Image 1 (tube, rainbow, N blue to C red):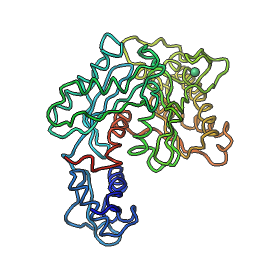
Image 2: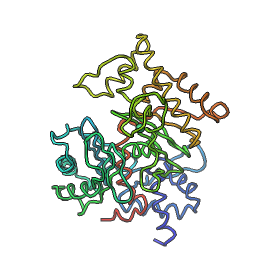
Image 3: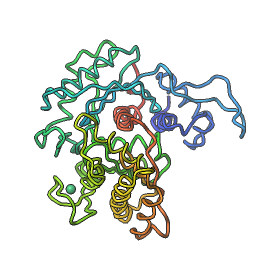
Length: 398
Ligand SMILES: [Zn+2]
């Protein structure tokens, strides 16, 4: 196809992938090209086995009938993996954020990097071997900052890994050493990133952050608080991948000590442990902290002590969000993990504190919404693995 059409393949695939071009006429309009060019681009994506073009045009109520576009149902997948404090999860993900059933495994007894990455590779390879679909890449979500471009982990507090552990290299090495079966082109392309960053990317493309221009995501899944910013569709990761450590914003200068060296950070004042402590509860050692804290937020309706704890922690979260809104001026804030539950339990309280405590809050209230995706970190990891193909779909050619 001509060069002009080739440069449109990536943008066209991204439009179908994110549901913004459900028909060929929508693709024509979004790419701002002629019908013939859009038709040729859609046909090329179909020839690559990525997109389907319905041969029969269907009416959509407006304008002339058009050909429906979709993701090839049996098309290629990528492997998404997530390491978290309670275990490791893997899933196969098609284009369109089409997440297969995730498989969850406990963490190995030895939490050192080598046995952990071996366990991830074994779990991932077993899943890749189990499908008849081609696997084009893999990406891993980690609960710690990951530097760019060298891919090392800093402050991997959950697992006690040394600062500077080469996580990108370890993931690539262990996965490619595993038996991936016959439907993988060696070496498999791999990538690693921070889980909150990936969750934000997933929510922006397929969830509660769709169409937001400056999307701020704040989340607490186990210990601590993470955040990320997506600006015009791209993650803002700073000069070395470490931007948006929103957890270390001070919200109570007389508060708890934080591992960062400061005190009263969002990280230690609004995570599951902080909420349980505010209600005077000792966490049960055999249950995930998030599950226990989420249950507590649902008890706020009938338990005055739970209500008081929820309101206190929601207020501290809102003070943090107000500070972030002043600095970042997002048009949408998506709350995930425990923060999603706090929003559900105290929506008016949380929103009014953000409005009262931020410069722009009273004038132009920023929209604060709950996260939409159940496994946003896995969907986001898949986005990272798909990225080379969204940039140049011809890489998917057999
Ligand atoms: Zn801190």
